[in-house]
Image (cartoon, rainbow, N blue to C red; front, side):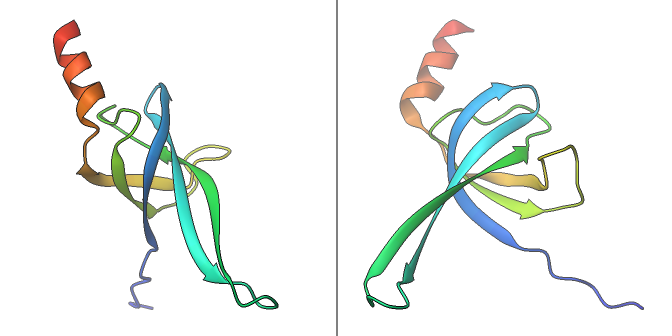
Length: 95
């Protein structure tokens, strides 16, 4: 009963931060096509819980799976890996 389940983590780019405490993260993965043996890129978008509203569009973030937080949110923000420099400086000017 004491077995800890290792939760999945992924990294991606924030494409929208317009919602309150939620960001949309685009995750890109590469894999070999089973028939054509070519490397194929595919993307998927996830809604991620951002408790402090710290992310802006363009940030590269790490996220971890969690219990369902809403109808579509099943991921939590672990942290920002790299920041988008132009948007951070624009936000600083507004304050």
